[in-house]
Amino acid sequence: MLGNMSKIIGQMQGLQETLKSLTVEGNGGKGVVKVIMNGQQNILAVRFNPDLVGQIDSIELGQMIIEAYNAAQSNSKEKAKEEVSKITGLNLSNLPGLF
View 1 (tube, rainbow, N blue to C red):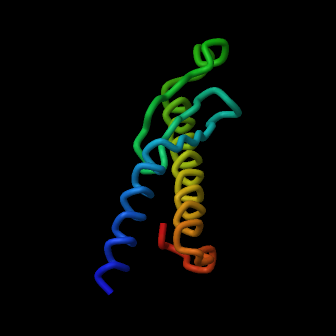
View 2: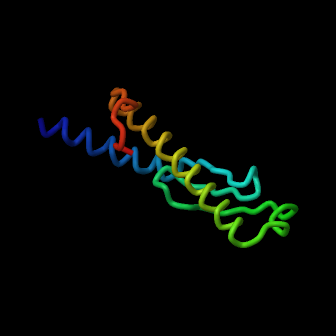
View 3: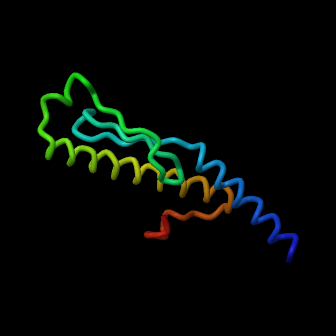
């Protein structure tokens, strides 16, 4: 039993490292804003399309940032779920709210 627990702990530590190095992105405003995030849902970068950003008012730009963040977070959660499924062998798609 303890040997199994040690294996699971090792796998979870490996998962954390995998999620930390995994990157996803989300776009807002049809490419005006891009949020790049890792699998632990930490924002790594926010990028703006310089050709388009100057034409947008601050309120609309704020909404685009939120849109991009939410898309990146959704992508990050999906990738995390895939990684956990690889390690556990379980199909987690039927467990809403887990990620």
